[in-house]
Every structure is written in C-alpha cells, then in structure tokens.
Image (tube, rainbow, N blue to C red; front, side):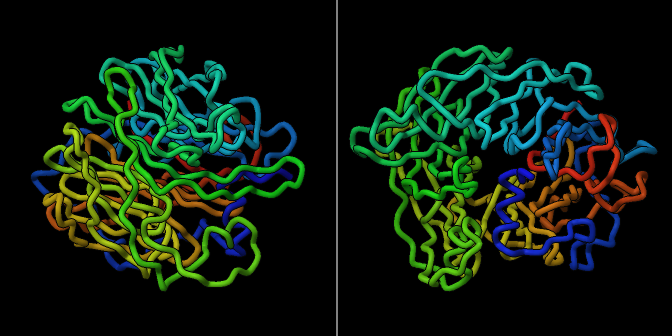
Length: 450
C-alpha cells in the first residue's frame, strides 16, 4: 500500500488521528455565523478539494471534488461531483488558491513530480484535461499563482541535478498550460546553496515576486523512506516583468525553541531524536501581502518576518516576532484586516490583526481536539468565511468557519456538511464517491470558485 506523502507524514510521527470527530473545543463553535452589516454577501457557489485516495489501492484514483458551497442551498456542504485523474499515490498537494474563471486550474501531485490541469468552465462539473508537460531543467512543482493576464507562475523545488545544490526555480505558463519562460533560483552569491522555492506571492504594483525556500520531503523508491534535507533559510526577490532574480535575502536569526524540538526529523523517520531546539528562522514557509506594499512571512518553526522596500536597491527583511513555544505554523489566508494561521503542532488556528504591518497582534484563537491537525486555511473571496483542511493517516475533514470582521474570532459553520449527515464539515471518510466505491480520501488544497 502506497500512502501519500501528507498522510505518511503523520503516520510516521506516531500520531493516532481520527478526523471524523475533529470539532473545535472552543465553545464559540456552537454559535451561528456572525451577522454583521459589513460582511460581504456574495459567497462562492463551489468549493474544490484536491484530494488523494487514502489507500491508493488498485483501480483507485486521486481526484478533484466539487462541494456545494452555497449557504442558501439545501445541499450545502454535499459533494456535487468528483473528477479522477486516473492514478493514485500522486501526493495531491497545492493548487491555485482561487479557482480560475478562465483557463485551466493547476494542481500538483508533489511526490510524483506531476501537475494536473482541470477545466472549470462548467463550475459544478470540472473536467480533467491533461498533465502539464515536464520542463527541462526543473523538477517538483509546488505552488501556483495566477496573474492578471491569466498566466500562471509556479515554483519548482529542484533543478536537473547538474549544479551543486540543485536549486529550483520559477516558471510561467499561459492559461492553457503552455510554457512561456523559465528561470533558475541559482544565485552566484550563494554558490552551491540548496535553495528550494516553495511559496510565492506577487506584487504587481512594484513589479516584484517573493518566494520562500523550504525543502519538501521526497520518497526514496529504493528504501521506501522519505528523504529529508535541509534547505537555505532565505527569501528571494524577483522582477515580475521578466522573472529576473534580483536578490536572495537570508532571514535574520532567531533563538532556538523550547517547545516541540526536532519535530521535522521525527515526522520523517518515526524514530526518537535528541531534543536540540529549533530556531524560529528555520524553514521559511508562506508569504502573504500586508498593507502598504509589504509582506508577512511565517516559517514552519513559527518565526515571523516583514519584507519591505522591495522596489528599492536595499530590500529589507525584519523580524516581527517569534513563537518558540509553538511549531508547525502552516498555510495562512488573509481575511479583511486579519491573517488566519493554522498552527499544526499546537492544534490551533490563530487570528492576527495585520492592519499595522510593523506590529501584528494576536486577537483570537481556536483550539481543536487532538484528532485534527489544521494545515491549510483558504478564504472565500466573496465572504468572511474560511475553509480549513487538516492532515492525518486515513481520514479527512474540511471545516468551514466564519471570521468576525471586527474581532477576528472564528465561528464554526455547523450547517456546512449537515445535508450529508456527516457534518459539521465535509467528511472525506466515506465508502462511495461519484467516481466509484474507492473509500476514504485525504484533502489538501481547498479553493473557492463558481
């Protein structure tokens, strides 16, 4: 049995998860959605979930699921359809954060080094179109960003192995998935550096792109074990108009953590490790825009940085804060003036007020039962609601929350998924899917559209 990477990650850690019962322990979760006059009132009609078949058995397939996201619908939170890609064990991982209205959706199967393209022109009935062609010189696509002209930027973790460090790079595709141009993350000032482009954020007003460097684990086909490697703790600044690499900036050092030390190695091997402390500058993870043309970066080790002066000759990376008692600061989303951030190993989501880009403030938090480890949060552009996916060994659930636009507090949408009798939340722990009786699946990327 081939277990996908994001499932294997926590199997190796020895965590016994039961995501079917992953309700939040915060008593606010029993309240109705906020009724505020300022809340946007144009919800997306569909939620797309990029998911891996949990056991990757013979004849099974990874798939894109489309879920009813219309709060006024009698089938709110029910599956409307699934689009299998014809193979399992691809490690479905990141997709575009927002469903495209024109062009093909990009979604990667990270450990298989594959990207799948879906046609969402009929929003309730997505169609699998084809795989993205392999790109000479780059391997392992990770994150995607759609530009205003419909083109898509993608980070690639690795090169072709011909250079020391095997740095990855960036590629640009047109709306149909045809390669437009490609560029390398190799920087002569960091000779031989293991730069692994991971997340990206685009700042068109200043003609800039930011990428982080964080190595994903890869499966060694000979040993059946995941290979963990360290990567440079840097952020890279690029020019959007021609994809030129402008600067590679090292994150300022932060002190070691006193919390869950050596968590990455433990998750990789499942073996005990000697606590040594993990500094907050390790594993630059995600970037999100801040007011005034700057950006906030969180590391997986829960250090936080502000990146600014991107359009000058001296771009800056400044320390914002460090949470040494936490670990696993994962994939956040921006909701109004707030950043909603899952923290995996604390089993919580925190809300940061980022209206002052120099001083983010934690204003709310939500703690989950031990069975649910939140990993990715994604806002619906038309509302103050957020979809949250978690990670586990054999089951998955997608929860929907409303974010109070004034306080930042999260409230569980208890109606989402109730039409299936499996809610609150959309459960992927089921025997039957529209594409067949293939059993449980694990969601990773979630995106709204339609």
